[in-house]
Image 1 (tube, rainbow, N blue to C red):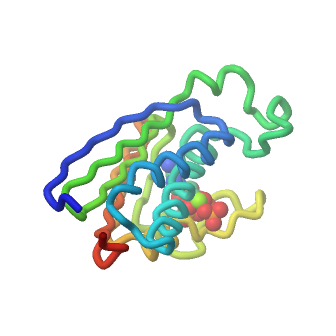
Image 2 (image 1 turned 60 degrees about the vertical axis):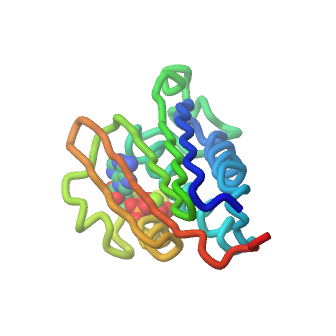
Image 3 (image 1 turned 90 degrees about the vertical axis):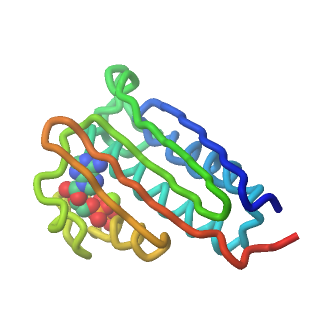
Length: 163
Ligand SMILES: Nc1ncnc2c1ncn2[C@@H]1O[C@H](COP(=O)(O)OP(=O)(O)OP(=O)(O)O)[C@@H](O)[C@H]1O
Ligand SMILES: [Mg+2]
């Protein structure tokens, strides 16, 4: 394994729910040559899907039922809204940024608290940020009302499947 390898990938995709799966698979592919364990891959995929879901449903306020897109606000106009994913690797350090240019978060500390949600009526549990924090080594959230949100997550792929 080349411990000094640097690699950066920047992807932009439509803010529609099917792209949550795309983001999960892409990050798994990106980290595959870091020789991660299955558990490490699952952790990162889960954190990425929470952040991407948040960008789509909270940032852009889009509906979240793929099969019934038209009736859930996932109309054509949402397709021009973009979520960006930046994957960076430096040695065993994996950094993922999920960026939207949506409504932003008024109080980030409050939003990050477990069980806090502004969409209780949609049966959201308010655990997305708590999962990101639990599954990654570091989490930072930068947000500005009306401008958008950038979630940065770092995980060290130590003790993976060394070859
Ligand atoms: N990208 C974002 N843009 C705007 N608001 C956000 C964004 N991400 C999170 N939030 C706000 O932070 C709150 C907490 O997010 P979190 O992911 O922890 O819970 P949730 O999405 O409401 O529920 P769950 O993730 O359990 O389905 C959200 O309810 C929303 O108000
Ligand atoms: Mg969430």
